[in-house]
Length: 227
Image (cartoon, rainbow, N blue to C red; front, top):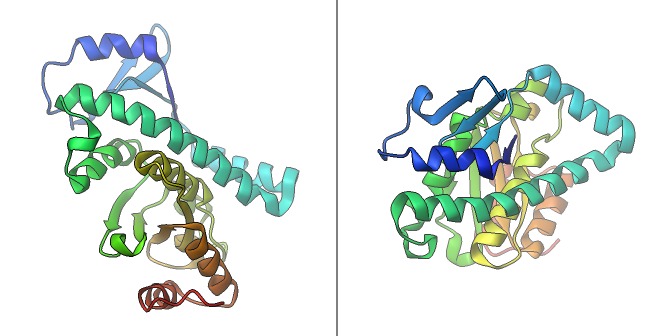
């Protein structure tokens, strides 16, 4: 996970001379004297092991039980909200234009690229249903699911919260998110539904009734919200 370090980030911002910064050496900067790793955008990055992720998950479950999923989701929401504001700043600095004046697919790919570089996995956004009020997001090689392995239940609540917080702030409209398919349930990749609360509630109900991600996609596209 990353946190903002504005002072240290200013030094990197002043040294920018190129837009192409997609190699490992260009994107990350190690300050050995201060013991920090900053990325191109001035975010402080913390290196963690798989044991850390496992310990965090198990520790939360031990402390709050089933509510651990809600806690991780809430953390993700706040992370996404703050990251949306930070992203708007560095995007405008890099491209000399507001995020409101930018092609949406390009904007979103630009936002996610640092996450991919930091080890959060590759993604794909299906925006074909955007006009109907929902979208699907696929994550390949989720840091959480890959680490926890096949545990028979969705585990990427942090990602779901991140998407909810980021997109809510981006469009100025409350959007919720739920994982409808997870690598930790034996699937090849993780899949999330992003949309209004009514659709998320319906998807949650269908999941509890044993529906698959394909079932949920079909029902939503058919206009079915009846429980």
